[in-house]
Amino acid sequence: MQVRVASGDIATYDAPCIVVHLFEGITAPGGGTGAVDAALGGMISDLIQSGDIRGKDGELTMIHTFGKLAAPRVLVAGLGKSSEFTVDKVRDLSASIARHLRAKRVAEYATIAHGAGIAGLDPAACAEATAEGTLLGLYRFDRHKKANDDNFEVQTLTIVEHDAGRVAALQAAAERGVILAESVEFARDLSNEPGNILTPTEFAARAEAMATQHGLGVRILDRDQVGEMGMGAFLGVARGSAQPPRFIVLTYNGGVDSKPLGLIGKGITFDTGGISIKPSEAMLEMKGDMSGGGAVIAAMMAIARLRPKINVTALVPATENMPGGNAIKPTDVLRAMNGKTIEVINTDAEGRVILADALSYAVQLDLSPVVDVATLTGAISIALGNVAFGVFANNDALAERIKGAAKAAGEKCWELPMFSEYKELNKSNVADVKNSGARGAGSIAAAFFLKEFVDERPWAHLDIAGVDFYDAEKGVLTKGASGIPVRTLVNLALDLAERPI
Image (cartoon, rainbow, N blue to C red; front, side, top):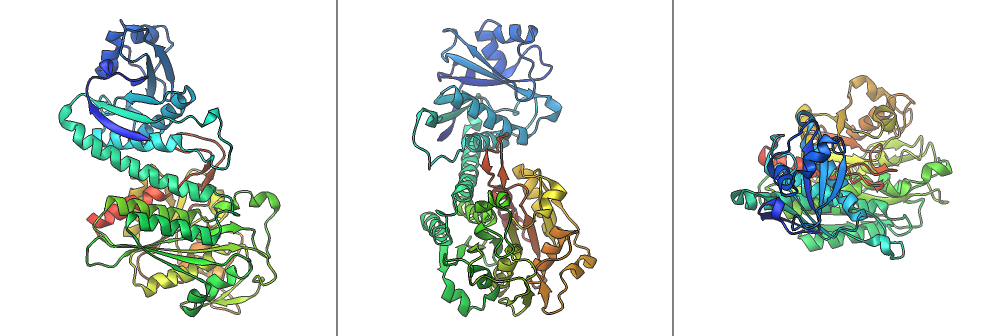
């Protein structure tokens, strides 16, 4: 889809549909909406007076112009209360508008920058959010369906700006929004793929193809190579599957002399639970247990395109967790790359086990700070539901930067405590640490397990198990994989490039 910014007057713009907006409580529209209203002989004002248009958040009203404008249709979008309107709402509104017009089979439409007038939001931020929200809202995963009439797609969005002097800045902002959205779509594609298609080998192949296309460094390590490196934890989980494991390494060089930011992602391409097998209904979303790894790889795609002055290395251990004849068993002991031993209490707590080796490798590579992303625990869903992902950190400054990056992205998060008493939950009688503690504080126990392998460098863990998949569309979220927290990771990299920790 093409997103562009053009100088002009929305009231005279020639497109199959133009989109204007209205805040709740406004009875006499101004700005671009007022110009369109005047050209329509006060039709929008009449609809406001009759109560057919109220400006409520998410309200969409289609008006046919019958030759009074160059555009045959006008869509009036309700913005809600101006005091509550934010850039996040620009994203969600843009997504809803795009889906609405796609359903009406509108291939091209033009809009004004929502929120850049009476709401007082930065015009460039609104342009970026409009582009971002539009693409994210239009996303769908139908590559395994037969083509039919429902495959209609919107082709072009034009943001019409009345101030010609701002067009270049808004175009650059819109292009950034497109880059972020396309990276999220890449992550969604990876997570939505069935497990029989996105095997560890295919996962690595897609990461390698993306890296080659965008100029990233790439290494794909096989079973023998990671074995020589001493990754006994990763290989322990992998040995239950007939599919060979892959360890994905992507590097971005921003041309600076500094330690690389480390992005680590869990890459379980299908999780049965292993010998501690899941109930059948609990497996239905387990093709997405690599969503953390997918988010990290997709973030690298955006970083490569945005070119910040920072070095970044991404590490993704990829394997299935299967109950094959050679699978690990509860009470088995594995040795991680850093020499620490792990007692396996529950083979369905495999994500932290493979991340133990990835984090150990990050330490060996001297990456700093290090951020890992994983669909790690069901417990995080109990704590936070499907609204926010959990943040755990050993460094307050890094935690604050992540929270700021998430806020800018519109991806909600919440920091959970790392009190030293929780460390006891992972104490083992036969090994250095065990991979599953008591029922309480499950997400914190998992974070403390990971902390064993980061060597005290600035580190944060993002548990995204509650926000990786959705069963209905809402705003920028569509049914299936969410692509959270790709935009948070990209914003963090951009922020650290400007203000290193």
